[in-house]
Length: 219
Image (cartoon, rainbow, N blue to C red; front, side, top):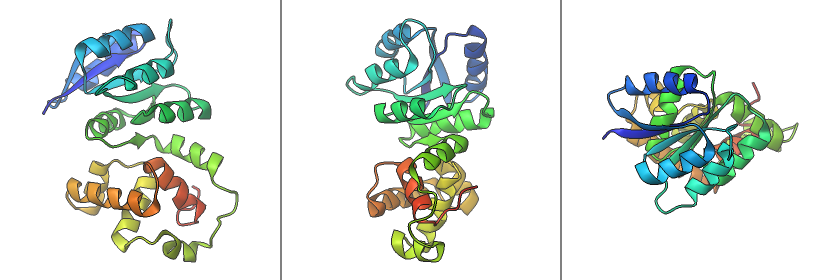
């Protein structure tokens, strides 16, 4: 299946660069571009892409407001937010709106492709540096449980703990599958069970809990 992508950025040079990276991949097709927030909302409705690459700072309507409008529609596309800024308030608002990824524009092309494929597959992918900032905001200075007790606190199997460690490093399901030499569907199953057992909504909340318990150490 080809992943249909809409690129939204007010800088033509960046749109051209993103298009060149994405169009080179046999499983990805760029179906359109938008240069401001109002334009991307209109084009998302007309083109029905699978994934929208969304810049934050755009004229007329910023990318976060555009994300909120797009994701409020029936059967919306997945949205991956791209920005040069990793300010916490941007991340919070994007995640609250339901964005499936948050990457810095200077991330390598491999991370961009991984984020697009992860979003199209129904998972979230957050740049590790951004995850660390979120953890720093939510997690206490001292773990609530000693690291040696964290395994009991989390209540996960050994394999699920392995997967959680890699999720905390910011890896996508495909990257985790390659690291553990298992099928990607197996990783998806493990991630689903982790979220269920920890009673959290998404991967970011699972990572925060991993830090809070001391299972994963900062740095």
